[in-house]
Length: 275
Length: 271
Image (tube, rainbow over all chains, first blue to last red; front, side, top):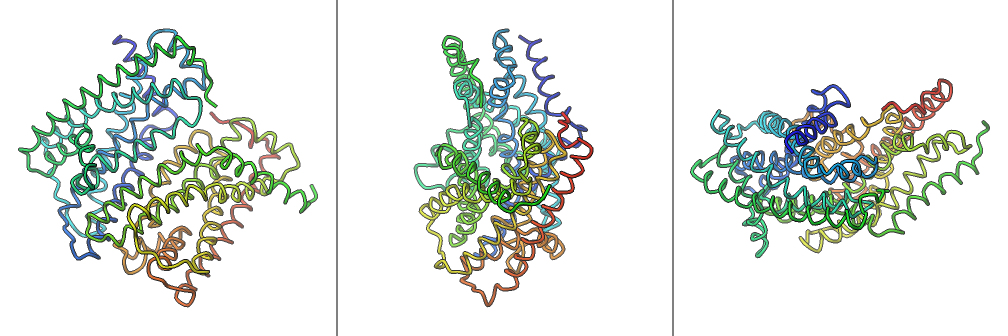
């Protein structure tokens, strides 16, 4: 199992980085991530300035939330892509026959997570600097070794949640034969609204905040904010909620994928060509 | 080969029809295309509301409507010939008497008509959800909207000829271009003018992108009820940008096509 997983991570990293000069891959993904964060900050800046309610402390709230949102949304689709691309190129049926599809998918997610983590941390740094230069403010981020370590723990917990969600998407990809990329777009958009990435969940109309509370990503983002902006005493409670929810999502994803794989094997869906 | 306008027009119509039939014949495509811009604009409309100015939610909704087109330009125009090259379709285009320029104009026309339902769906859903104040539609609005689309698809034509050289890089470059251009052109917030939070130097760079001028003009006519008398410099600039981008795009394509026919490298799949 471990050897299969490591081989899949290597394969995933090869796919992510080998098509060009690796630092260029990181640069090409950091630029759009930074631009996305800047868009969110500017929307807040324009709206709150015109309303006369500008509070620069919210800028760091937006930078941290958007960075993590960009991180999640850029790798949750990796399992779906692994299955659908694999079906189109006939590699997935081979993975499937070798009884290693689960480690293959997990490896691809971990590889995407590694690339996306570099991107998220660089985008966090670049957007903090750029916002400072453009708006002449200093976003109040405490970038100490401890806060960065706590931030990294949040990202690791996020990997478990994203793997759970990714497995559900991979299960879906086993059965669909076209336009399968449409679903992750919706999921990314829903996460943007409900994960407290760019505004507090409490500002959503009732009962929508309940959805936000049930997402592990909301708690991971809150924990990351507690680590980087404060107050630090909120971190423990949020990371605990995030871990519990992430474990639940992971187990649910695992169960759904195992069931779908069994069904796909029995009904022969694995050979369906994506068009 | 002698230029035949009839052939050129037939190719334009045929290529446009493929897009239109594919889109309107399969409502799932509309559902898939509407997701990204609709949910992004909804999230940003919530952010405008949270920032204390619910009237500005319209900026996010209008941005979502135009973002549908910007996505279509990148994914279905700019990278199309590169995909066609990889799938073997470009061989058929090159060997047939169909002019590539007509194919691209047809693709643009089909893209504009095909993206219309997604764009309208974003605008209607956003309006129903947030009820932003809009000024009544005017001829100026229609003119600006059409010029913005022409300029945008002109950019798509120019990019598609560049992307002919690329393979997988085309997708990565699309990913890298989408957000920075959206940010600079102010799809969701005013990036130029008095309300822009950006420094003048960046506003000057942003103003070189046709989408920036288009978005600024659209916002001013939709939310501030400005008319032809206030917006004529923008309209003139947008018209000039539209003509220039199409001209440059078609010239580049003709050059690459001619060079590719001579050297044979236009059909080489790099990776």
